[in-house]
Amino acid sequence: MHGRQSVLQAAWVTLATHHSWRVAKNCLNHYIPIMSTVVEIEKALQTLPLEDARKVAGWLQDYLEEKWDKQMDGDIAAGRLDKLWETARADIASGRVKPLDEIIIGKHDEYERLLKGI
Image (cartoon, rainbow, N blue to C red; front, side, top):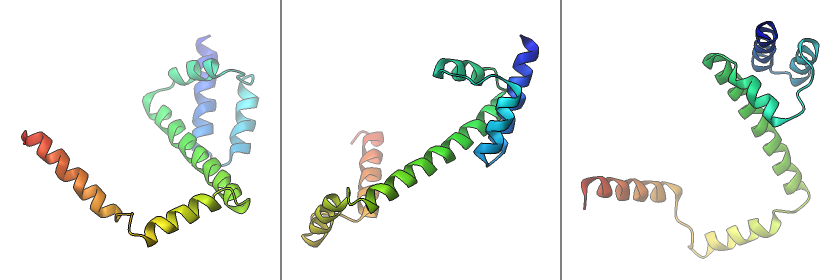
């Protein structure tokens, strides 16, 4: 089992360090059988050294962001966000929207007051 874990670790490092999912997937398929459940993947990840786990986490974050971007692009192209956009534009035009900087500064000031006990 220890040997399989080493191979698994090598496969995950390969996955984390390649930007091409297809290349990484081929490497994984070569070294280990496909993991079919989230539990199996979680167990495999728990065997990784911390630095390798961080690499996998970074790759996964990039992958999820790419998926999200494609979903948003599809939703925009299909007009699914048109109503939301029109509502936002109306809120801006009527002055019901604050600049983000103002909100952030206000929350920061509120946090500072709480820390000081005011």
